Image (cartoon, rainbow, N blue to C red):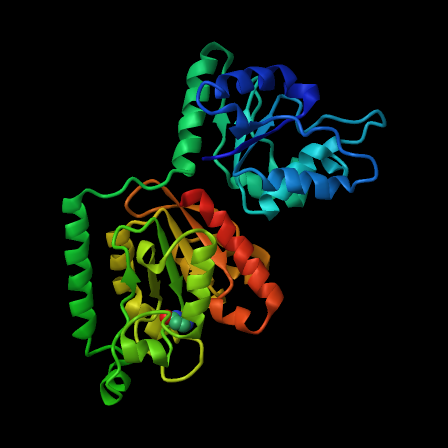
Length: 361
Ligand code: URA
């Protein structure tokens, strides 16, 4: 159930927002739509308070009226440039927390130019906006409500026939992987009687988890995340009420690499068509990239500018991308489960990142 936070500037859009709120209640329950943050208690840090309010929601509607970017305080300073501007604080918080953000244009407003925004708000320029026009308000809000439902949709389960097709398609990929004698890792696999590790789980999973490469335990079993890091992954899935059988788990490299190292470009390139076929069979709503390498590979694959960011900066964010099979899916980078074996605070972050996935469960 998506929870919606309406962010707006009283000066330029109060009337529109009242109307928007009333119309949204035709599509969502009242408990799903938050409009005004109740008064902030005395002595409380308002940034923390607003952060927590934004954290309660899944989608932030940034309502932009005709004077949104220019609105100034009594000293003539542009509010957006002030660090205590609530509109700015809430949007920045939603960006930081990786929330879905939809700019909503009202009163004939246009999307502001990035030159008019503080740098921290630039990411909203890449979010598709919707416009609510006076003459077709009800219709426009209906479109917005549908877009919110699509963005936060839980994937409709496949019919028994489609599920069977998916199982057959995965078996075909597995056979091709077994027969992949020209792989740069094939001789290591043969010499050690290792198995290739295609991945396993639900062929129709909503959530697909992808990491770097199988370890030795995984290669001995032919299953991903079989060792200690697998136990962490299972524990994290448990915190959101999921089991391994409900999700699909795989890697960018599908054979053991023989040592702890980064995958070579040739190895990633070799297995990329297999990974692409796996994506196309599962068609997940969310791809969770576990660890920095997987994050970089996935974001590069989807041509996202965050590909060069550090995982510490973007873990837990929901990044919307267009799926090759159509529609929007989300990428969520997280820390690698093995990393939390060494750090309690990373484990807490991983747990928080998994909470974001609840939206799709
Ligand atoms: N680490 C990975 O990156 N992948 C696995 O399958 C297991 C451990």
